[in-house]
Image 1 (cartoon, one colour):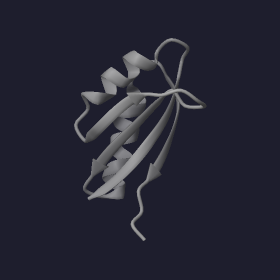
Image 2 (cartoon, one colour):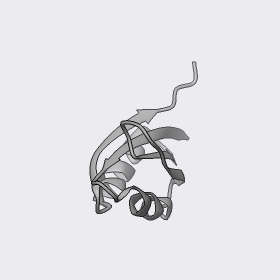
Image 3 (tube, helix red, strand yellow):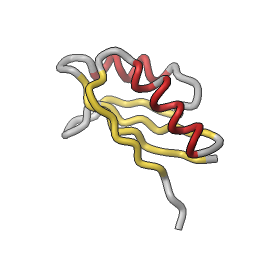
Length: 77
């Protein structure tokens, strides 16, 4: 199982609706509004890195109000 944090920038005033929409996507563990350079931080999981990429591109990035995402896979050293 691969997990990642997805850092999301949204249009002004859209952070709450984006987080609520993303929280409903299968594979998303949490989606929370935050302050700082990013507006929403998501923790997601998938069976493989390829499946995680598909989750981000096909589902997360399609949510209305998102302007940019940055996916940070979790590593266990």
